[in-house]
Amino acid sequence: MKKMLIILFTAMILLSCTMEQKKKFKDFEAETIGLNREITLYADNGQVIKRWEGRFNITRAGSSLYFIDSNGKSVIINGTYIVQEK
Image (cartoon, rainbow, N blue to C red):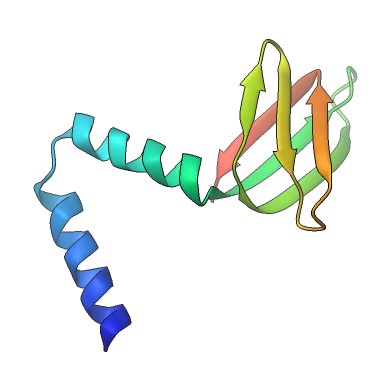
């Protein structure tokens, strides 16, 4: 019941917000609890080197991407990668 009220309240807020407010809410969610994402690292020939899926809080610095994987290990990647929200 409590979970349903939270979902309903969140839906009402999101539906009544402007795009700027929705973006700020999404940014806050990404920075605090992370977003459900898929991160794919590619080789220079286009082949997939590695793929991570889960709830990640990512940090970009230059061309590098930092995050902690589902095993609690810090991951730093550099090169061609795609971060996609699920």
